[in-house]
Image (cartoon, rainbow, N blue to C red):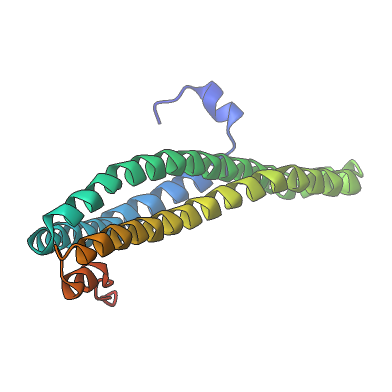
Length: 189
């Protein structure tokens, strides 16, 4: 509402409505799902760290040393993936806005005998958007796969180091097993 009239001349109503709908969905998700997940993960991390510290301070230190490296790497690549996703949404909004404009004024399109031209133009816009969609999907897949790989690799590192502590009789096999056991799965409400 604070924008000048030139802004509204440049941006179509359909484009603005799509962006506003996305903002509402993101806000609702952040206020409910993301906040609940954040509390759950924070409680799990805090409680798990205390239990790990009681079982083996050395393994806890190794585990906690890995977290910042994984966190910074994941966040950096996550920002890149989010940037691609945002660009894709903006592009999709532009394509939808153009289609809405042409369909809203279909009588003028038909009067000018431009149906085939508009159909070809829409197909071209979709074709131009496809590489962007593939790039955004690849980035999201790489992020998820990379995080899973990093998580399993860090678990493997802890188990290998824990194995050396067991061999030196500084840690029992039971304690090592309890460190590497997956956390109990809680069903979503």
